[in-house]
Length: 125
Length: 240
Image (cartoon, rainbow over the protein chains, first blue to last red):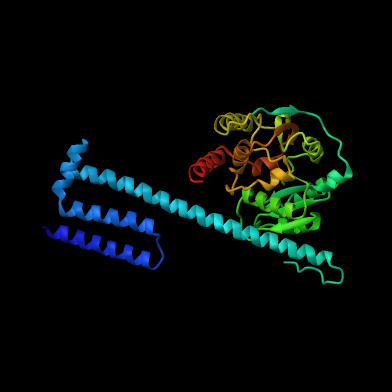
């Protein structure tokens, strides 16, 4: 095994450990954890046995192992972008619901004050 | 599903006018909001203005003129503001909900024609159509943009309409209760048409007059904005 392989494998082990820790801390769901761990294991196998990636590449008609890894990386990156986008959308949605809740509650409080005789006038911003 | 089209202008009773809540989403519309709201309130007392986090004096204008004034703490988009206004109108006991633009393009006199078929129980939703009515001073570029968006909407949403992204619409209480806009920005108009198709609501297009002014054109959609709406809408459909 070359030095480069050892460095890359060490990096993958760190990512593996970080993923497990993030899941235990509740930052990632079990499903996300499973997908990421599978990805890290595949990466580790690809680094440890590079000739195997070439064999698989030839079997699927890509040619070179590096090309196969590149295509897989692009796909994984696109999937990652989509996951982040979906999470961003969910966050925006929650933000909108919060803003709406505050707006409606504020209007109800203001209108109720106006409709109650004897109460002081509603505060103005 | 087919859309019966009408140009009739209904004569509404005072009770029907009181039961109708006019929802006006507004973002930085301080320049003309007060005039628009006062014009609407001459005919319909219950006007709900949703200030969508404006940075000008829209909120003050709304407080001076509207019956009900809500404020989004931060800007969330027209779709979000409409949903807020509709939910509030329902809480206040609205019999019908009408959506109306804040930029002075719409004519309050058209609201009666939108409400009449709903009050008569003939349909659940009425959609304003400038193609059936009139579009005063509409630039050619806007005409092309609307033509393209109508064709796209007919193809994607499968709702037979002659106009799209027209902010003048009316909903019965039952239909308004079923509205859950998730596309916060301008793509909500297409989402509403999808909802109409999915829900099986009876809908009708009604002729309305849209008056384009330099102000409303400056606030309106550019071709780039239209592309952005398209992307938001398609992503919204994919990642529902």
